[in-house]
Image (cartoon, rainbow, N blue to C red; front, side, top):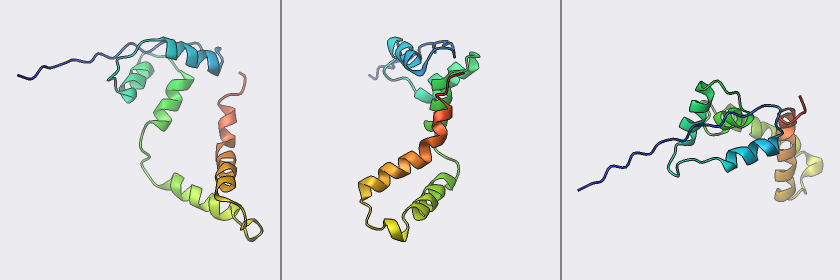
Length: 114
C-alpha cells in the first residue's frame, strides 16, 4: 500500500527592501521551508503575496530555463571578442575569471544602495 505524503510549502517571508543583501539572506535562511518544496512555486507564491524581494526576483530569473539560446550565443561572442591574438596565451582559468567579471558587471546594480 502506497502512502501519500502531502508536502506543504512554507509561507514566503515578507522582507523589507531596506535590508541589505546579507540581512535578507540571513532572514530567509532563518525561516522554515519544507524539504521537498519546489523553489519556483515558493518564489511564485512570494510574488503573489505582493512582496517584491530581491532574492525572489533573482530566483525567478535564475531558476528557470531560458526560452532562447541568446545568452549562450552572447557568451560565445564575448569569449571570441575577449580571446584576441594578443591574449592567445591566456590560461583557461584566467579566461573564465575574466568572462565572469565581464558578464557580471551589470549585477552590481542589484546591490547598489537605494
